[in-house]
Image 1 (cartoon, helix red, strand yellow):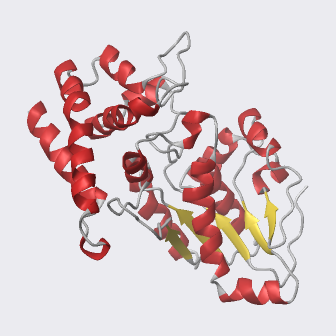
Image 2: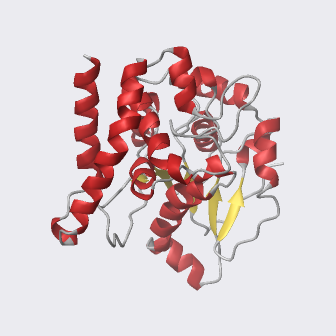
Length: 307
């Protein structure tokens, strides 16, 4: 059953650019419910289709008078490495994989939840609400399907001093199919499932549909992290009856990239990256090249190799 919102409570919707949160916002607005702001956390590694949908829904929000912002995690200290600003750059910098590959979910906390909460912490309506002892209402798009019910189970009963977490889709009993139907009824295209293209939750067929530049970077990420992987095989953790634990192995087995291209990336790119990092460490932080500059050179180099 849907609960009422206190008249004075600011309402923030977390929009993940996927089906569930999009339908949640559309229906919430259609029901005349209060909505103060919509925040989108960009990890920098969303699929191309997701970034293509971003301006489409932003235009819809503009047409409905909804304030919206894209927020990002911003590292504050870089010590002896090049500055990084995306989940991909973070993994390459630290020679690791997203935390979900290790059975944890801290990448979502770091790259999605924290940037939104920090933005809200600097937002005057939230500060005013907290000063008078109230809570900001935060709308989260978990649906009523079995899969999201398992995700919700980890959050159920969570109490926070600053936020009242609401799950409207669950209150309405909506599953993903119902969400897609609502988006189409609003005259909008249905977005794909929102997920990073590095995510361990990615299915084999989703990996197969990625552009070649993403596949090359996946090979690079696993090769860069390989010396530090002792209990898992790669981004998919461990092998199953339907796929290997390494996305690189699946890319090679399916012929998604040429085998020679894969071997060249594995054999040379991690070494070149380490050399770049060591050279950058000798440069003052304010003049130090960013990790994205090396990635651009990598992309250009492997593109020439494949031509």
